[in-house]
Image 1 (spheres, rainbow, N blue to C red):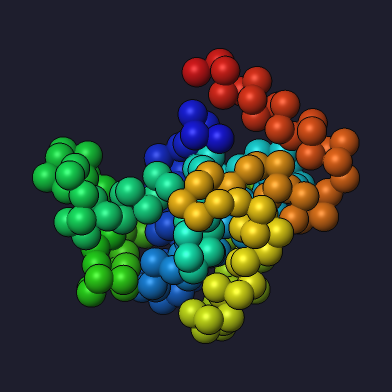
Image 2: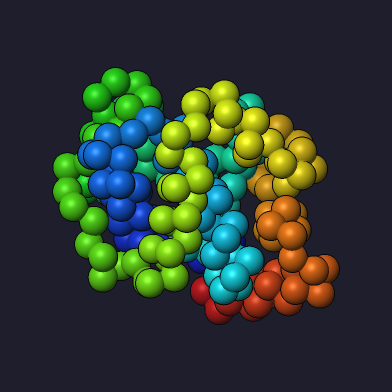
Length: 182
């Protein structure tokens, strides 16, 4: 999905989650809410909300580009002093190393009704989970089938949602065709 990454949608999805969480949330929970929202959206609508690639990390799937944005704003990236980093920092900041705080309201024009539907469902499922519970919950088959620090297969993400192999192949082909247009 890498070439399908949509920075603006992703930023506003993060802001939407932050708004639901009262203006601040830890990176881990944001990443898990996004993962399960993207999984639901892929399963239902054959499209990811963010278009991000998820990487198998110790504490569960992490959206690669969104994590890069977090690191840049936090100052942990080679690109932290870049213009893009400064622009992204106008959306959110860090209260400490892991706690993200919003600086803006989400612009709902960037999120479709189905994006919001899946974000809301994922938020409802994950909002009250502890760090450990979220970690365990996100260590499903897609995570288990992937080597550490490697990209999780979109096919495995959709399979984990319980879709048929025929549908998994359809979505994977659709995404491959869309990414080849870029």
